[in-house]
Image (cartoon, rainbow, N blue to C red; front, top):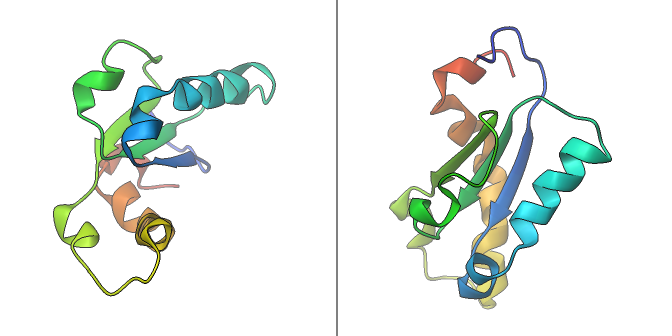
Length: 102
């Protein structure tokens, strides 16, 4: 499905407010319509995967975080806990063998 794809867009959506809003859906719609990007979009979330079931096209991959990445308790601000997931993007992409060329 993604054979030879060199680019992907990675979205990080954490927290109850994010899970209840339509921000992720709107972002993907903008990526597709305004950005004219038809390649893979990966959504990393702490929401149940059912939350996004049947919402996106086949080129959107929704995945949950690895629990150990969230368990560190040495952050002064709660928001920083989620921002650190940017450092794991390539690790999460490696979980999807079809994205090996990204």
